[in-house]
Image (cartoon, rainbow, N blue to C red; front, side, top):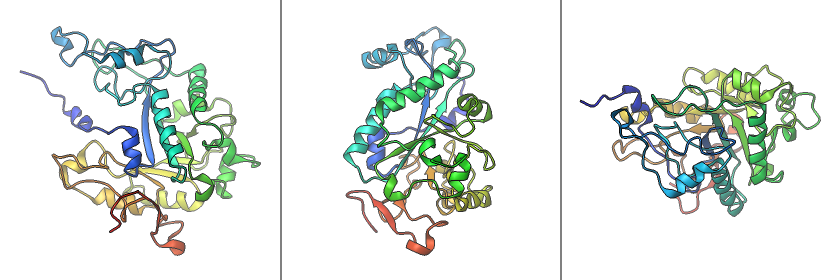
Length: 325
């Protein structure tokens, strides 16, 4: 008898290559990064039957070559969910950069990073390396090696002459849509421990590339992850009104797609959060009624909290070739 882990249901989804997602209107990408300064740490993932003696999984020569190179890797879960359309972080960044330069008028793209650490994903699997100061510095350096200052929004740019990043945001420091078109920015979507490690002794992320998920009172506050658009609706609205950038989620762990429940999706899209995440930009053939798209073929629309009186849901970027009704 084969044992089935009920928790695996939450992993039962997939994503198309990044450029396809961007073509379809995605303006927020989430990437899982693993520290691998010497290369090769994740080159031999276990197969699903490893505990039965099957050993390592079969991987393509291209995957093996990419895993052998020093630098950050992009795997959801080593040894369990390790197949990626861009197995190295540099590959992912390059794909996004190429697409961005070919579409210079796109709305700003949020690239969220999860820094994977902790225990092995499977018995006998590889343990991810921690992120120390050297790793965080290297992560910033990889990003800057692909995106120059003309295509990247950083905490220093938003803070400008203000004493703290928070003060700048409350004074309207985030660039306007016009100034942000064709650019990307990065956010570390992690808890307090990793945020503190990345931040170090910097009060407002001075010199850093990533914005960080923190609370509204922090001097480093500019971006917030508030993933419950129902329970946190008032907080999302207040944060957006104050000038913060907020990300929320329309669905999680495949639950909404399996049940067909669109309540969370509706709450997310009306919450005012500037970025709404979904695993269903395209419907899963098994659950064909559930997908998450903006109306009128839009990749970006006027914010229902900050700009409703000015433009009343007007599309700010239309996907080429998308139906407008």
